[in-house]
Image 1: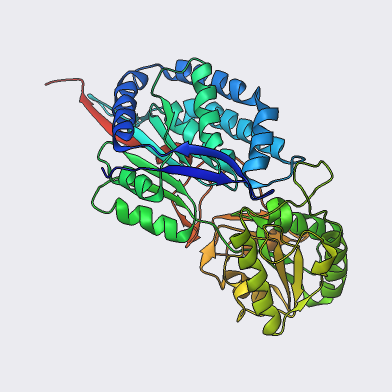
Image 2 (image 1 turned 180 degrees about the vertical axis):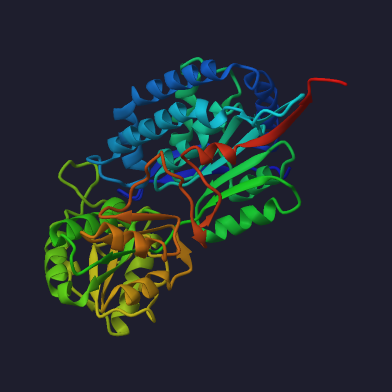
Length: 467
């Protein structure tokens, strides 16, 4: 494994100041961590499932008990307003507890129908050491998808968080250790990109759960290409919404605007493009513009702020340029960016924007924005909406707003997506499989199916009677 030197530096997007600095793990620390994880896994997998789940429940409680400190740190590290960061702790707990509830059923052996003289069943064995590589935009909500089911299934976890959110890795491993989990079950490493790829290639790692960009996913896949291990990839999206003629318009506007601009648009499954039946377009646009204009862009440490900075100035500049490119091509911006005082070029503070007269020839309707900009297009009918929704390299989620449940399901069956929503968006139900198609990735987390990728089947074929 290649060695590392130096440190990671978390620059807060709030003020551009250094918030936290940590030394990168060197080859010796990585080696000790993986040895410890493998040793701990041998004993942990032999621990009864109910005992494992009980300990993990205590760990979740220990994590939630630190909610206020966790929320404040998260706001400083990545810029989400303090009014919202406590919600990530609640979401972590919701997903963790649902996965623990599902564990006994998901991990129960499959017993085949009786056959004279034979007993047959399939049990699910843990894989070993799971490397979880988590992003900065939802550092706890993405990590929990793999951490809790991996541990419940009898694996150990090594966690690598983004250099933007290093304290998240420390909070998680510290909370789990304080709850009494055996040493080595959940450890963290601060790694550079190169160090993380070296860990992916290490033969002591048995599965990799990666959430991040498409280029990052390709790099992880290349790093593991010489090994026969599983890789889960959740790589983001360009998620569409369709507002049909019969939609409850007030609900559709409120939901899609929130889905587009929450977390400054930095959500993998956030709404980035909306298609509205032509007969409702003006009504939708007028209502959406009023909501967007009401956002308060400011210091995320202040309770009144509803839109914080993006993660870094370069990310905000990317969205500003993508928007400007669309305007040059004929799009019409409906929001006066100058009304948001902090939104100046070169800063991490990006004004929200609503664009009309957009087309699929524009980057803003095809390229992941990951920021507070939303393009709106009229459509003639369901067929045109379906065609445009599928006209994307991504396929994470898609939403339809209508009063007609059957029509929605018929549309949903034709949409190339991992999750289909009716009258809602931008939400992960832990009881449902979280997955994507096309450049949104592969694999699955959450639900009973999430346990399948973190275990391997072992068949038992027992001849119980001899002639």
